Length: 192
Image (cartoon, rainbow, N blue to C red; front, top):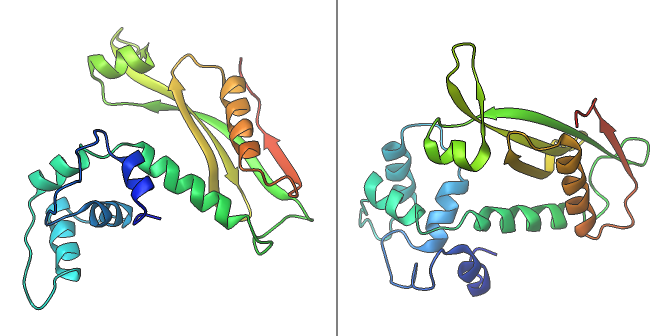
C-alpha cells in the first residue's frame, strides 16, 4: 500500500512534497516511522539507512533532515494505514473470538498534552491545585480484547463527552462494513 501513488497523494501535506528523488524517499520514511523506535533518533536513522544501503554505498541522513521530511507527512497517512490494517485483519475468519463474538471494550482517558498555548486553545485545559492551566485532551478507544488491537481511537477536546466519542468509535467500527461479525461491546461508566 505504501507504494501506491494514491496513498502517497493522500499522505503529503502539499502536492509538491515527496516529488523529488531523495536519500530518504516517501516509502522509506513511512517504513522507518512504522518501525518501533526504541533508541535515540540518530541511532535509529543510522540503523535504518544501513539496512537499505546498496552496493556497500553508505548513506547518511541527519535528524534534521528526517524531521523536515516528517513535517511534510500528513497524520492522515497513519489513519489510512490503520484503516486498511483493520479492514484486512477482519476480512477472514482467523481472528480470535469470545464465544463467537468479537469482544470489544470502549474506555476514555484524560491525556496530559504538551503545555503550550496552541494545545490549550485546541484541546482545552484543567487547572491544577495551584491554579495553573495544564493542557489536556479526552481520548476514547475501541479495543478488541481477544486480539489486542485498537479498532478505533478518537482524541478530542478535554471537555468532550465520553458518550459522543464512544458513538464516534462505534460509527467507525460500522464503517468498515464487517456486517457478518457479531460484536459484544463492554462499556465502563460513562460520564456525560
